[in-house]
Image (cartoon, rainbow, N blue to C red; front, top):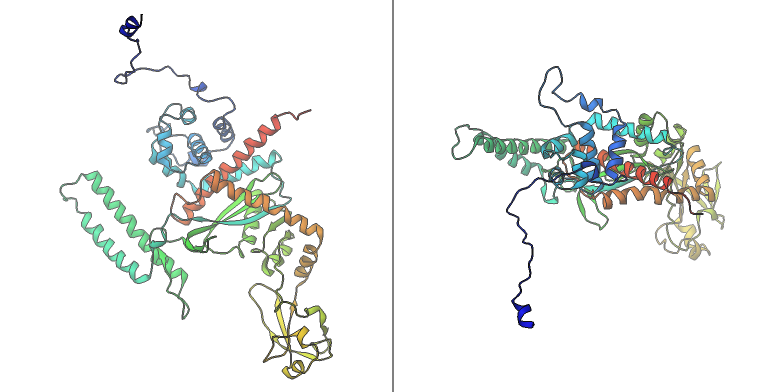
Length: 488
């Protein structure tokens, strides 16, 4: 029996890949009814896309090759960003085999050039589209503007730190690039196809343009102060700036400012800045929000980087409540008598210490956007012979005790009083979970830790795409939560 079983050979079907075949496919069954791609397509279908269509050259009257519709391209980019895909080539590749992409395109493949050009080729239309989306979300009650948080995050530019050069180096590179463009522009060049030659010439011209832009950016930065390192600009992305990172190092970045409505966490504004800090970004953000939604926020909530005299007084003038984290005035030394121990005499503009000695006015010292600071100091003789020196100024060996009096405006005084209350602190504590969540989502879920494009304008466009994606993802999530009945 065993010998007979050994003689029998199992019959196994052979996999034959050397063949071609037709596959019947129902496009509507490629994805489920509740798939995010369907929700994105349906939402974009509600928008007015006429501004995108106006830029299409082929028309029914003039004829021409039919163009890819803006609804398709917008949906493709938003769905791709939701998966962390930011490369046009990858989207085009996914259209060949990935079911959600196949469903969106109807089994057609979209050329990556078409996708790449569309992402950065409609600045005004995309900005208006973002405003439209905010209008729809507001109509559904998902945006209230009762409280809006403002926060910035640094996103790396599409440039290396080694691409930053001084003016002399950039001028040398520019002269060499111009020579190469002239040499490669000769149509009689042998051994190379015309298409390849044109591509090489175009690349050299783009390189030349970037170098010229780098010189222009250097001129904007102005001259350095004596003793400072000579200014440098990136030849890959001239508008990028070297900014300090969380690890203490420096890298080419853009400062992305995001305004988030605290009701449901929807992003209501985004802007790309070149400044390394956030101190001057609050008031422009309020103006942009009011322009987009035709309504100003009732309150803005921001951290200590935005909390300065200019912003506090500016918000008071605009009649917008401001909630922030005012940095405490640091004591000059630990363990010393505080300023409250001394009595101010307005008539003589002086302070009296507990021992009855006088601290005379020295001068006014404005400090940036903060309130004016008036300094007062006691004489060295009075402090040296004082029995309270160890409690008051133990480390002062060559000068007497000094004090700083801060003269606040009415807006600053009201802000300090408000933020000293439990209600003000409770309002501020709600900032972090809302403001920082969208930053984490964009970087982690959407994968946008580094821009895929160069230049401030294109970086702004990519951030609009990312924020559109974020808002639509939150809209889909909220709709699903609303559809789920509460457990009894």
